[in-house]
Image (tube, rainbow, N blue to C red; front, side, top):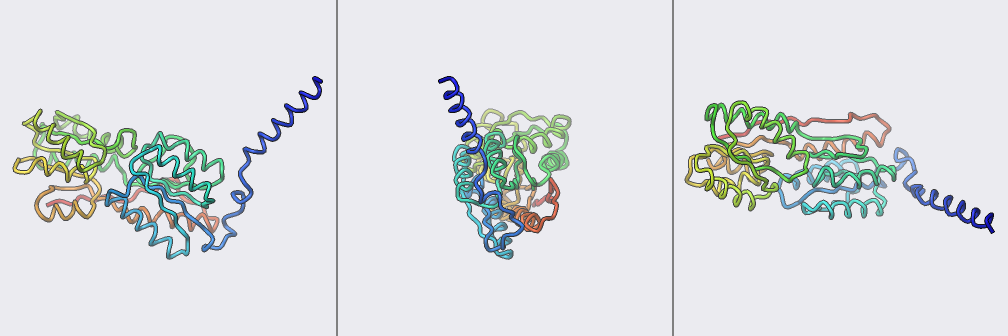
Length: 302
């Protein structure tokens, strides 16, 4: 009887171990597949933001030139939805994943899941805390935050009272842009208020209204993205307050031309998307790729 129980336990362990193995289709050599048979799964944090729409367009444009198929899903700024979306893409047998994380920590398990299934992962704009990433493509967010801080000092002088609109808590872009800004601000500016507005225009408006009501002596606002900055300029209409955003999206550039938004630290989201697909094309041919790619930033101002 004891031998029979032991045999059953061993059998169950063997079956369990086998079930952890990736399906056969995931073990195939992607370098031998035709481009038309390659599918790229794309998970973006939100398509309710022009910045990520540009990123999507860059991915689709470059994928078309290579003959790759693309499946795009919108996380709607919901990390739980993004995790489910990525799991679905894996189940749909995508060959590669391009992920723009909603939350750098929350999405780690999904990246590890892709790793277990031998699916290369490329992240855009925001990093992940855990899991193997083939390549991380982003602007130098720390440098961009420093550029914003220096611009305020150049325009208004040291000691200027400043408000800061932070991005989604937990996102690497939020941490890095804030870090870069404070590298300058903690020495040369007076940050009297900071609060998250979750990269959202409507929240940028509401948070800014509350911020300047509590701190009427604020002379400048740095927003971690343009959507929040565009909300901020609605709240500061008629007031002498400098507003600087981050991204360089079309609405922000138009606002600058109309003498509303003062400046933005401009990224190139379309180029990020194109770069990700070019990397996949390199992997597809067996070439080694850089672990990290930094896309240049520039200041756009009135």
